[in-house]
Image 1 (cartoon, rainbow over the protein chains, first blue to last red):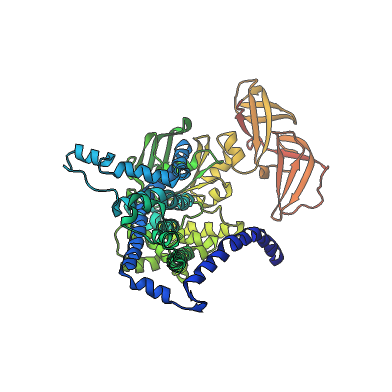
Image 2 (image 1 turned 90 degrees about the horizontal axis):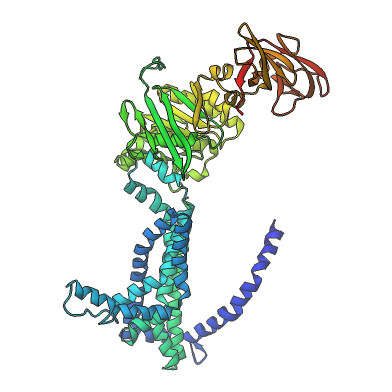
Amino acid sequence: MTLRAERIGLLALPGLSFLAIIYALPLFMLLLKSVQIDGQFSLAEYQLFFADEFNRAVLWRTIRVALLTTLLALAIAYPTAIAMARAKGIWLSIFLVAMVLPMSVGVIVKAFAWTIIFRTRGVLNDVLMSFGITDTPVRMLFTETALIIGAANVFLPFMVLPIYAVLRQMDTRLPEAAASLGATPAFRFLNVTLPLSLPGVVAGSAFTFSLAISMYVIPSLIVGERQQTLSMLTARSFLYLRDEALGATISSILLAIAISVVLVSSWLAARLGARQ
Amino acid sequence: MNQSARPDRGQRPYLDVVSVGKAFKGTTVMSGLDFRVAQGELVSLLGPSGCGKTTLLRIIAGLTGADSGDVVLDGRNISSLPAHKRNISVVFQSYALFPHLSVAENVAFGLRARGVAKSDTGPSVTESLDLVRMSDFADRPVAALSGGQQQRVAVARALIVNPVLLLLDEPFSALDRKLRETMQVELKSLLRDRNMTAIFVTHDQEEAMGVSDRIAVMNAGQIEQFAAPSELYARPKTAFVMDFVGLSTRLAGRVRHIQAGQMQIETAHGALTANGTLPVGTHVTIGVRPELISPEAGENTVQVTLTDAMVLGSKTLLHGAATEPDKLICELPGMRAGLSRGDAVTFGWSIADTLVYEATP
């Protein structure tokens, strides 16, 4: 048994070495730069970073945008996942293609598409004005709201698919059993479907949050330099400021946030799983 | 409820399924099906898979809508009532316990769905768990339970809401044979004590005979016969019922002539006599229950070469050589050593025990 398991474990070796050499090692070397000054260990870079009010604002904005993007994606994804879990045949295929196909369209193309909708003389403003909801065009492009809507759109499949997978696996007789015990549709949803789908919600939220906190192209195109995020700050440090230590520091902070999200979500998933 | 008030079969039905029809994607599962159950009766829907028994159960529960017909319960037409307003509890095949809830929370579910506060469900839950002897497991997660324990929890969960009707879909199929028999006895007495009206769906004829007052044998969306187990076994209405319920010796034959209410029937194993007056030339199926056959000459006699003699402890089964669909089976009480493959034996039985059915082409 053990021997067999060990041998099967060997199959992961190529993938692991690939990750170690191409990803983990350089990343480690980069991160090392954030805690070293002239070869000495130092947290000065971090103190410097957090001392700057601008940096703190960027950090908070990055987290806020990622959180709101996750919430918006969840609000849209959950009903979609329910519909998909119940869909059959051609409808299921249509749903799946609709989820997967947009991923093959480059994120730059999508971000530009959003600018068409959001700009001052864009589609959305035309609609709003034609209905008389507003007299003058509303400024939407270059706002945080536009960024959140755009990001939620791009990351939607990463939220929908894990929830869909969990709902699809759920025993359809559970809601039926609940119904036969007198539970109304709302009671069934709140007490059976929703709690059983939480592992999918946790996984989808972790994916979306991780992607949203480190996104670069979407904020660059939708809000531009006006409202920086951590990723943009990182790129600026490396490319324009040539400050590798600052870049490494911001990267480490981003990584720390991402790792804590992964840890918290796997802890949550394990806890939810243990009860089932 | 008065314990001694056994249902009178002639009374107004408690559950009245009237002319129900259902089709899935253009394929008719059942049409014009009638089914009546008296209060306090334990009834089984017995049949092979695909016969429509589960569909009928789901229509009664309100989990599947019928295309036509009505479901009337206690004089009230509930056809258009959604499942959660019917107060009909269902015990599902693999119990469908809520995996995220503890045993006690599972049992309390129906009460909470009826708006009882979580803190007030305690006494009823304890009582229900006592009933199925699961009180010691109240705080366990349901995944940690064995099959038999899960079934007990499912039954407690279904009964705590005092349902007007209990439906059980293959409730014993997930249990091993020994446990299945214990649980059948247990469940039956529990339901009797509460004068519960219950419908079991099963494909296992022994189970159906063990738990029910009456059995509805279903085939291809129709109820072929609805009768007490003894009646069903002794006087099966159709060849299908005879084949599905219990073993039988069966021979294909053809009516050769009729005389004084009796038919001479020609079979591959000689001429046999049976009561009845089917027209001469009719293709028929003859059946005899194996324990009514003795290894000596009788009013009907067949010479048999044994292919097997199975000593099963309380009984011995003799199988005779026959070509499909003919079957020659004799059941003798006790252990009969000394008979083996290749022996020539006589099977004899009476005319009264000879069942005849017009063969379906």
